[in-house]
Length: 73
Image (cartoon, rainbow, N blue to C red; front, side, top):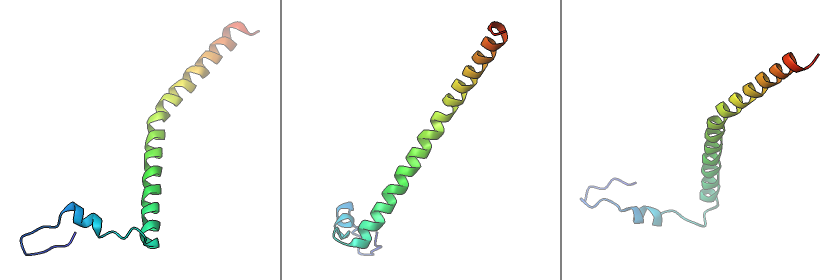
């Protein structure tokens, strides 16, 4: 956002209008930003899901140990 001293700050609409939509470099930069954000969200989701998977695996392992200990010769 440009800093102007005339007392009239630029509006959000003016900022959007300054972005050239047909510029290949701008499109390439936008694609990188979007890919980075998608990766961030995926890693965040996987991090949230991990503890449940670890608890489930631990419970399954305990169950298998109980079955092996008590029911197999």
